[in-house]
Amino acid sequence: DSERVMTYRLLRFARGDQTPLTGFDQELFIPPFGSWTTAQLAEDYRAVRQSTITLLRGLPAEAWTRKGTANNLSITVRALAYGIAGHELHHMGVIRNRYLS
Picture (tube, rainbow, N blue to C red):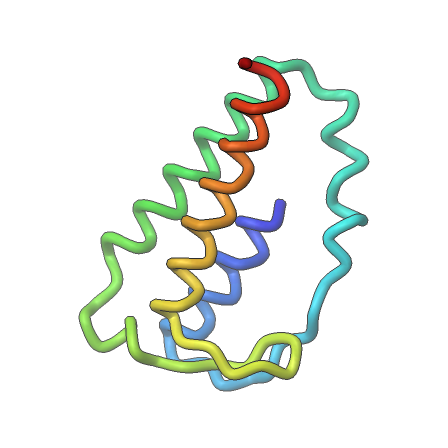
């Protein structure tokens, strides 16, 4: 769910919304997934990832440098996009190392 939250922030900032956004407790977003099957997790992962990619591909050039404030930190749309990608890479590495090695 972190990708959903980060993409929501990215969308708001890309559209020029300057309303400061509060932080979120990522631990609250973990429990529901514990009861999901591997197939459900994979389906959700693909849907969220595709939605993020579609949003990013559709952003106009000027949106990438727009800034917003989240969790009392100023951040650009570009930085959020890189953060989303890095977060996904991190978790894929964890899956590879813990479950596929």
